Length: 330
Picture 1 (cartoon, rainbow, N blue to C red):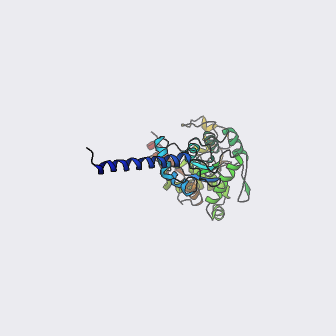
Picture 2: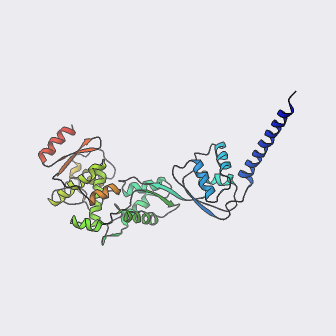
Picture 3: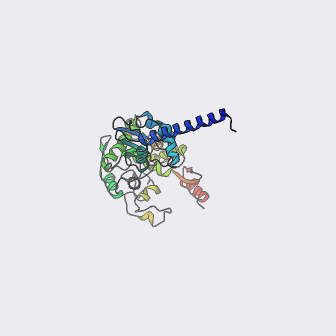
């Protein structure tokens, strides 16, 4: 015979379980007290669902974050929420809120990341991949729109679309995207950019062009300023820059190997054939390359060649360069 105390304990446990179940179903499927009004919230990239539920509660979107976590776990949906900015209509159940998070139905802005060194065309392709529209449309705008930098109107937006992670409005136009990215470019420019450019006998857009060359040539941060110095040394001596990355910019698609025939290509970006800087930046440089271009490291080096492991071998004379080429490019 089961003791009275054990029967009472079992009954209390059953009642507690029933109450918890009722609370869970009310919290997830019945309670429409939140949001009180139309509410927007941001889900950062890389957030855990616990962090997402806490943010939703803090922003007044849901009232029961623990119930939301349990429900998402039961649905195996706790890792499926799309990061971005959401707008939620008032008085929805938490089940409805989760549904919108999963399908992006309430999403009003999406995160997009552009790595340092992306070209305008690569950025356009990334925007298409993220569902913002045609890559061709974005590329056409990026390569034909202009801004004024240091009193000079640029030839395009290449070089001035700062690579970073952005939260763009869903359906953002090319103009809106470009405006956000170029504003960030101006924020990232060194405060003394104008003075530094003048000291280098260039204007700011020209230094940004150097930064783009550094971005595509350098791999190690500790070599960026040194490579910038080599570029300035060659400019000062009126030597062709002979930068492979600039030549590649003229190609319709990426080539891993530059041939002798490629060196004869007729293009203003062929820095083997043309003295001076290419007519525009060849990529969109990040902060390390911008800083290197505005603050080059002084040296007597005129040449460099890739030596492996992300580093280069530098040379002062053509004989030294030829020896490095023979050593590292076997």
